[in-house]
Length: 114
Length: 113
Image (cartoon, rainbow over all chains, first blue to last red):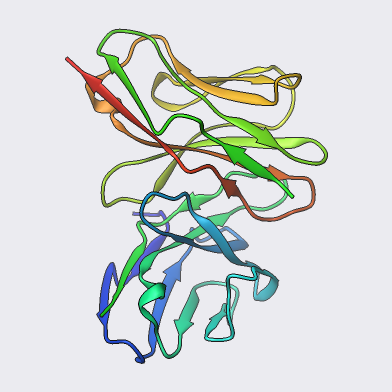
């Protein structure tokens, strides 16, 4: 399968714990995006990388959230000191660049904070 | 700021009938518009896009969408609905130099026999 992959698919954690999610984009895509989707809502933008550079962050991304893309390939999203309000589906997407605009999404990681 | 509105939470249609899922947008500058579909427990799948050119764009699975600049709309259409089209549909806009997609709240399409 050459699509976007995300791991784990599901994560249950207790409030206050740290969690880390991984995203592997489509191999030739240099742009990578993280979104968050809560029940009944559309995905909301969190952050964006072009190669290894993090170029944009949403105000939704509090200081408890950090994302990296160290070698311009896979990316990780870490949430520190999780809160119940962090429970959501975290979606990763990738795109080829400025000449094509569509983003291709992974299956998501569903986070439940108890 | 860019925004997308999907005025219908749910659209019900009988199999074989035409379907329309509505979307209106608000952006500064030229809009780049997209439709995605989401099946249960799966990520979003790209259906089609409007960047420039012909106002009627065709996409995957027989779907098409019509861009109307004066009405700031980008409605999704299909001439003959299938039960397997039942899913959650999202309209999104990517405006100008921004790098992110702004999504609507989604419309659930229910196609019945």
